[in-house]
Image (cartoon, rainbow, N blue to C red; front, side, top):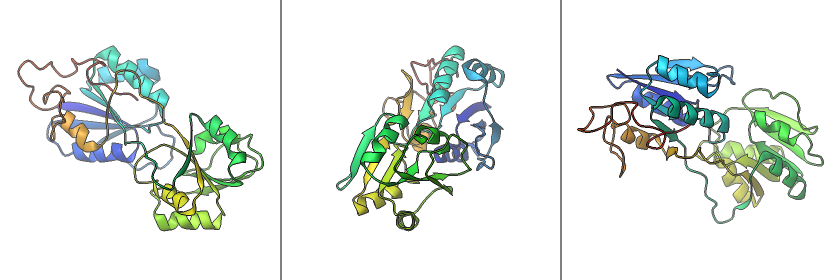
Amino acid sequence: MRHVLILGGTTEARQLAEALAPVPGVRVTSSLAGRVSSPRLPPGEVRVGGFGGPAGLAAWLREQQVDTLIDATHPFAQVISRNAAEAAAAVHVPLLALRRPSWVPRDGDRWHPVDSLAAAAAALPALGRRALLTTGRQGLAAFAGVRGVHLVARSVEPPEPPLPPDLTVLLERGPFDLAGERAVFREHRIDLLVTKDSGGSATAPKLAVARELGLPVVIVRRPGLPTGVRELPDVAAVLGALGLGAPEPGTPAPGALGLGAPAPGTPAPGALGPGDDDASR
């Protein structure tokens, strides 16, 4: 029995769990942060809550005999990703990062890239007066000092203070379609969009509406992964790396990441270090 630990409650994390759960000889565990009270649970085993930093995660990997660690967290979950890289290196468990590709600007886009939420907040007054803020409830504190701009923030659950003084909260969960996004922009008279470069299709329609209306978009660039972490763009690529699908060029032989029959001379599961195949939580 090979044990795969998937970190994250993203769409891609659930899709990967769905692909691995029925595979004979594979035990799949999904780890959720626990920040949402009613998360969508993937198939297989599920644990909720933190590990207690990289040392706690390393201990869990060892105790539960995890063969492969997959960081499928949100592209902006920097702390978890660093912890995963350190833990995987400490116990020599192969690590892969599943990251949906970044969004790419198209003709008609008016993007204003910034490197942080603080920089996004500082840019707002010069660009609009009614902004749709889709950066997540945990980032709202960065906008607490914004004045002269009405913010419409979308969140799965009610946000906690500190909050911007001129704020409307929409309690909604994606994915969001084009018609729905048009209605939000129209109803709230949105003239500016603020978002993170999360990538993927589930929340991309807001970018299409901003393009249609010729509105500016403040977009926060995503942080890089820890040094040496191997990034894969989708579930199919991860399955290939695990020896359960068509491998990418240069992918280690099946078994090198803890699944499938090892090829002659292939290291035993867990023998690869963070410089070979790792990712982060």
